[in-house]
Length: 436
Ligand code: GAL
Image 1 (tube, rainbow, N blue to C red):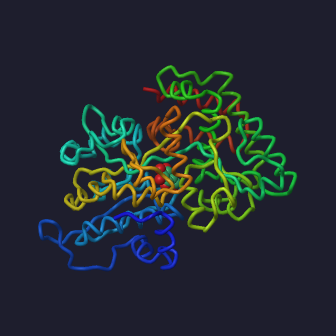
Image 2: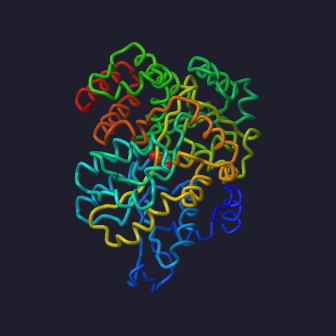
């Protein structure tokens, strides 16, 4: 059973996020004496980083749907706070190292998952793909990313759109700034216009804990400069990080960050979105989980806020995909398999993506199914089929954890020294060290 996203959020809202709040409190839900498929007590420990705004509501929605099919399995939420999984990934590494895996954990399709596969921490899911027919039902881009060495290692739940700019319409109109700046120079001009009105032009946090927000903006600027061919080439062996185009993108990052008000304040992505929603800031460049938080806040699309491809990236869809895995040594393997079946099913994906601001990762989305989605997600679906698709850096597709963390270190230094030349040198050195 799937309900529309707004209906779910309305229900969740009237219950004060009812079931969701209990489920998302970080401990087991209250039911006891549950039994699993084999008649033994069954509980399912799910590890993710969905603790903020719309992402928390989306997890609740998926859990409700899971319980429709698996009322006997007790859901144990092990979500670790921290946008883009910054803290969760470290905590997961500790647990895997200690031989204490959760029953299933959130991963991201692409290079990020390869780390776990190569470390021998995951079970091959070929049996489930065969049983559920996912080889035929999944979108081919995603299907390719579930595989390594000819085997399937994860089940994709969603497709997120990364290169999106979100704008508060009122603030932009007042500043005579476009809600959808076409290119990076226009964006910089728009930021100046907003600054002249006394509002914060860009909601972003550039602290060490939130450095991924800067990386997210940087990747959009690099895609704007390099386009859908040049961007993926950066992640190949011999990728050219010394080019003038990379230099321009990094200089744009310097200019943009200089215009943001107080970027060294600690602000989660969701708090930054809320600042745009409340009209304290004009823009945010962020993935489409922001749409979910705007919806939860009761904002009206294309009236209170608007969205567009991040400046200069029209025609390119930078994507990420959340997926779930079966770690070797999962204590309740059967319950984990039931969760994976839910994640790979149409009803599971719809229950989650309609609330999350994402789109389902399947090859065919029929017209009835489309009816569940709002204007933003329908736009995103059109973009997915009508643009060039490339993978995200910040959200796990193109670079492994070690490379990502070298880039984080370079960005933390850049936030302190604001020197794009030194940043470029550090990025080029990281590429030399980590490109396969
Ligand atoms: C991404 C993840 C999204 C969303 C976001 C913010 O990495 O793919 O599902 O949760 O982080 O935390």
